[in-house]
Every structure is written in C-alpha cells, then in structure tokens.
Image (cartoon, rainbow, N blue to C red; front, side, top):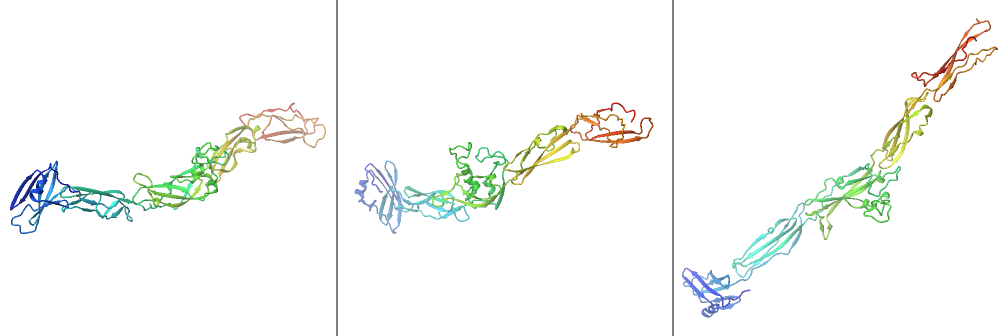
Length: 487
C-alpha cells in the first residue's frame, strides 16, 4: 500500500538536469500540494510545478527524491515531457512460487528432471528476481527434498520471498537376484533355548540357522541401500505344523504362551531362517525379500504402493552330513575261566547323533585271539548308522588271560594176572583245570619175556598236550605210585 507522509516529515527535494537544478526544502508535505498544485491519484503525487527548458523530447527521466522521515526512504520522480511525477512508495513487490512438487526418479537414474516457473512483478520497473536456494528449473533433482527459495527486490529495495519443495522419490523396487538352488546341512548342535526337543534315545533335535545373505546372488538397488529377509513359503510341511504353537523357549510344557512360539519362529520373516532335523530329506521353498532403505535406515514406504521391495525364490534341500558319535564301553580284562564267548556281558556303546540313530552293528576281530585255547585279545567293533546313512565306528578290547593252576595224576603201574585185551590200564587224572584244553595220548613199548613170572611187559608213555601251556610256569604233575618194577 502507498502511504502519505505525515506533517512531521521533512522533505528535501533535489532535481538535477544539465539545464536546470532546483533545490527545495519543505517541512510539510501539505505545502507541496498547496504551493505546486499537487494532486493525489492512485497513490501517486503528481504536479506540474516544474517546467523543463528546451524540452524537445518526451523522454522518461528519473531523478532521486530523498525523503527524510523518522528513517530514510526513497521517492522516485519521473519526468515525461514537461510534466513531473513523484512516486512515494514502501509497497512490497509480488512473487508467486509453484506448489510443492513430488516426482519420481527417471528410469535407470537416481535423479528426476523437473521444470517449474516462478512469477514476480512490481508497480514500477527495475525489479530483480534471484534464486537464493535450491536448483534452477530444468535441473536433475536428487532423491529427497530440495528447498527452492527466491527473492524479488524493487527499485526502492523493498523485497519479497517465496519458497517451495521438490521431493524426489525412488519408487523403483530393488533388483532381486537369488541363488538357483541350495543344499544345507543340519549342524551338530542343539539349541537348548528352543522348544524343538529330543526324545533322549534315538531322536535328536539339532537345528541350523542360515542367514538371508547366504541365499542372495547379487541383489541391489540403483539408488539406495537394501535390507534382506528370508521366510518359508506356505503351505507349510506337516513337520512344521507339528512344532510347538504355544512356547518357543523353556519350559516348553508350560501353558503360558511365549513369543515367538516355535511354530511362529519357523514361519516368520526374519534376517535368518531356522531348519530342523525333521526336515532332513525334504526340499523347502523360501522367499528372499530385498527391501529398499531410506537414508536413515528405515524401510522405504509409499502411501500408495506401501513398502518398496522385490523378492525371489530358492528351493532349499535339507540334508544331514554329520556322522554319529560312537563311545565304546571300557576295555575288559577277564580270566579264561570267566570268559563269556558271546561277548554280550562286556557292555554296549553309547551312540549320539545330531538328528537320529538308525541302526547299530557289532562285529568281532579274533586275529589276536586263540580260539582253541580261549586266550588272547578280541576286538569288538561297533558301527552306528544315522537316518541319513552317515556312519562312524568305535572299538573295545576284551583281553582273556590264562593262569596255569591245574594238576595231573598219571596212572599207577599195574600188574595184570589174566588176559586183558582192552589195553585200558587207567588214564591220567586232572585236578583244578578250568579253561584248559587238554589232549591226552599214549604210546606203548612192548618187551618180551625176561622175568620168570611175566609173559609180557608193556611200558606206556603218556603225552598230555595243554594248548594253554605256559613254559614260564611249568605244569605240576604227580608221579605214579608205586613205581613200576615189573609188568
């Protein structure tokens, strides 16, 4: 708006031209109107108080009128022909910025080209428009918010500003690249803090956590960082549906829910996925999601399309490559008399596996054992097979010892007075034998008549073979009694 000077204003008028210079000092603007017949029209004070000499051209001329109020303002005087116009102004120029704009990035680019228009004007010519912040129209604006500010200034140094924002969004989903197929193997350890439990005998509960990054094969976003997650795809297997739906941590038999339950943990979208022994031998289809991230690390979201992501799928075959653990029974030292030929009384091995034990076999190696005499070392070999066909073996030594502690009494000399064709005149007797394997034989040497009362003399030599004979400890024996003097 235009305003009139007050009575307190002091006016100093300087008009300069090569053919005339007029200086007027007035203390009251009313005197200007009265003395020079000034009129107020549409905010302009005009008058014909000055006549230019030798004015030959209707030219627009500008001179400066300094008006001293309580401060310093400017008054512009304009000469057209022989008339003089005065502009007394503190009105702001006008400026109009476009509304805030939201645009999407160009294809295969992280910027968006944007054209806009800023409109400015003023009552008098000579105003200027400058951009004080942001990017010029037609520029490639980066992702995010760019604030654009403009300043318009008129010839009286009055100024006005406006601003608007250009928001560039990247709504192009990331590029998802998955590995074609994966084979994973259950680990050798059980998670003691979950509710997937062993039965304590042949079924065990090892698991495998597999990070989402291990399914990725180079996923990326053109302009932003990404976050990867992994999850099972429904429909879920019968095994997954049998997982604990109430508890996910001990005590697993509690009726009070815990979050996540073991079932929820198996089907949830996370930064890693859990595979179970119960899935060994099956193929699971999983989804790898690649989320676009904002600069602050949050997941990019658009009110219309929602979360910005892409996904791909991987078939995962679950295997068990961990061998069972075989712990044999202790070694056994046993005397031959207490030896159990079946070997069943010498213990059984302890077998552990990450998933499940299928069968256990036992064999014996008798290479260092004398089966005839039941002495030496027997090696028992145990082999455990798990449900995936992995196997491991362990062995136990059974050492059978022999202690020689028996006695032999040979037959006494015998006098036969009647004919005896059997040839049996007694046999050696054994005392204290246990695990000995004794073999008895004899040889006869026959002599003719040389004593008056005998018709035949037989000298019988006995041979006893003990396969457990220990030459360090000679075999004790009992001599025939009485000694043989005649036959």
